[in-house]
Image 1: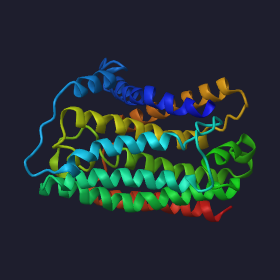
Image 2 (image 1 turned 135 degrees about the horizontal axis):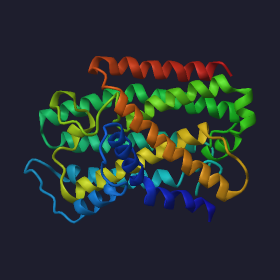
Image 3 (image 1 turned 120 degrees about the horizontal axis):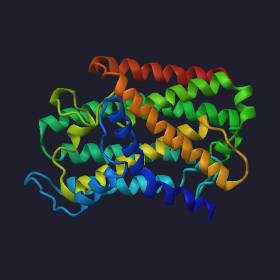
Length: 299
């Protein structure tokens, strides 16, 4: 039963993280900002609307948003939430989760290419280029932690990350978390890698791929993006907040507080930093990969 807690929490509270980010940015800008529940209102509005399709699109375009959402929901059942176990776990599920996220990106890119738009093709090309640099960082980082924990399954891996583990392997864990945090920003299209609110055509990455989606399809994409934010955030906070009390309520509250803190940190970063130039993004991701590799080596 405990294994179902994380999927339920994610499905209910994932959009709230985006609301916290937007509200934090509003505070820094001196505005009242939208309510915390604004992402929920937006999702309901989109799901009530009809969708418009280009004559050039096929079933590939239709399947992209739904496949992305289904993959995100599937990932939740293989992810622990701190000390709370995953619904399903086995040796190697770490690699499965990483490749499921890659499969989600594959469907998004295919849907963008199916429109026949050179503009969306440009965004798809950028997305694949940057993902080729982000995925090794994630794999090396999680492999470094798995090597320390002695398991390639995420549930026992997270259970082994305790305050004692941090005292014994602080440099390794710090480098891995730094690398994963950069990947977290890149994979979720956040500043300084991308801007989810941008309308500058030549600098768009993820948003350009979903320009032709509307109505319920766009609602699926936005909800899947919230779930992806939660998925990668839970991996990051599970390593950075090693509360393993054995009491589900305490472990749950500590992880939830960590997720809220992560959303606030993202809002602060986006309020105090500008986007990198496009040519700087690969260097940024390569630096993250180097951190993960060093963390893997210095066990």
